[in-house]
Amino acid sequence: MADTKREIERKYEATPETRVPDLTRVGPVAAVEPQGVAELDAVYYDTPGLRLAADSVTLRRRTGGADAGWHLKLPVDTGVRDEIQAPLGPTPPPALADLLRSRVRDDDLVPVVRLRSSRDVRHLLDDHGALLAELSVDTVHAERLTDGDRDGDGKAPEAAWTEIEVELADDADPSVLDAIEKRLKKAGVRPSAAPSKLARALKETGGAAQPAAAPGPPAADGTAGATVLAYVREQIGAIIRLDPAVRRDLPDSVHQMRVATRRLRSAFKTFRKVLDRQVTDPVGDELKWLAGELGVARDQEVLAERLRGRLDELPDTLTLGPVHARLRIWSAARESDARSRALTALDSDRHLALLATLDRLLTDPPLLKGAAGDPDTVLTKAVLKDYDRLARRVDHALALPEGHDRDLALHEARKAAKRARYAGEAARPALGKPAKRFAKRVKAVQSLLGDHQDSVVARDTLRTLAIQAHAAGESAFTWGLLYGREEAAGAAHERELPETWARASAPELRAALGH
Image: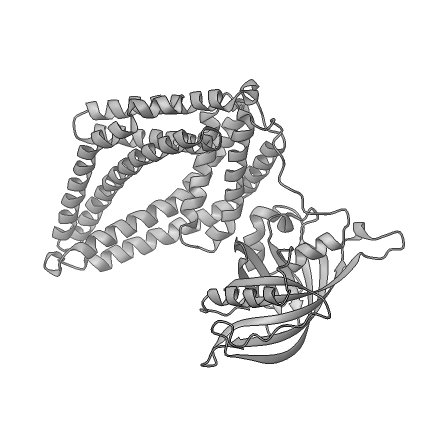
């Protein structure tokens, strides 16, 4: 079983002669209690090419101290990581190895660095004796473990240093770290340049295997190709980074990963004059598959939340029969199946093959002649082409009478709005404010059409629930009432569309984008 905690810490440079200043009365700190010295011995694991270190991910097996075991640290923000712990064992536990799958792929995890630390620990307490933060002075000895890094005498590279680490206690106010840092700086103690002990060990022990930087764009800076490849690289990075978040079932992770796949697929279509579609179309098909597998979970999550919200809005007098229980049963069964489907996709060889293909796309991108062109010209033309596609679909939908055919047409317009919005966002680094304004206006259209589609899907589900309730001898009144409300909501969205579309299709917006 793995346990997770949020780690918020700051590191500072020190020497054996460094003395920690008195921290009592610094912010809420009322007392500093020594906890003694712990001897820690940690072996860090990575792929031979240091894929984990390149993404600021660390996996270690540590003995000594109060939390001996396997520790996986995933970056959340600067100075913030999620630490997932598992019991000691000879090999990385499956629960942790699964979270590394998108980065490790088919590579082996091997020992790369050993860190032995003498940790002098002090607890910083408030006036009630509650723990605010833990400060430690660490004397560290690092040894490189990879065979290829040994010198001619077979000796492994080594390094040693001293550092101060301050880690925020659970539920403590992060502002206490600011107060402590201010006091440390006043005493001449400066923040560490290294983000982690492992990063410092790798740097100071040298060796052939350093974390590889992300591939640089082969297109010249300032070209359309450079802008498009930067966007592509960002979306690929998001897919890899969000894989463990989806496995951990973190809030909104499925949605964010699905969005990244859609953005990437849209970029392949939008910027067809920059990237060769003979190469990117098969990749787009695989991205569509992944988004579809993830979409089952996401769509279920959105629909269940919408229906629960609709039920909660009703007064008790209009809630007839066991409607809440029926919705819970329906939702639980579908959510379980959807999550299982998403995890099966992430564990599949097909997903690993897709990740390998995306790697190759970055290292050897299929650039066309348009990649060398001026971004103002190439990207603007691509964005406006997507805009024209959206305009045709909106006009077609609005010309249809209310009903099933219009619902389908509005759904197609929604997909076109999403692609046009992504195009504007991708072009923003090169086109600036006009692209930002364009994307914002088109996003409003997309959101409105998305709300309309949600009402259409909700109606289909409510009809199914009503049929099931009636067959079980329950009242179907509440489900019918909710159906009517969703029908009214959809009609309201349709009435709102012309005005929202008028703002997004204003001539001056298009003119500004085209300069």
